[in-house]
Length: 115
Image (cartoon, rainbow, N blue to C red; front, side, top):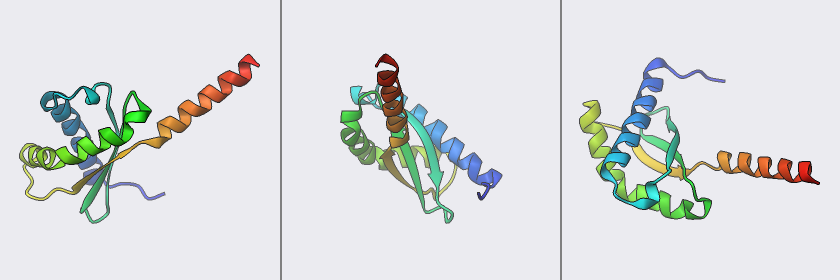
């Protein structure tokens, strides 16, 4: 496994922290309630960043990702101002399916335990 450089780790942590703050502060949309940014992964060439999110309702995943994608220019502008950088990676939002898989496994184990 390739370890991340301290600079890459720092920018990923900063993006995650600042995006969380901006979404909580700026978005008056109830679909963002309970939403969590689970990870930020910046590409090797710093051209794109995949931001994985998860929310309370699995059936609203597409709507949540779509709204975040539409907010991406506003969020990128805020990141550039906060981080003091001219260039930032393109923000790409996606639903974190790993948490859903874990929840499904717990439910399956609970059903087996009850049987």
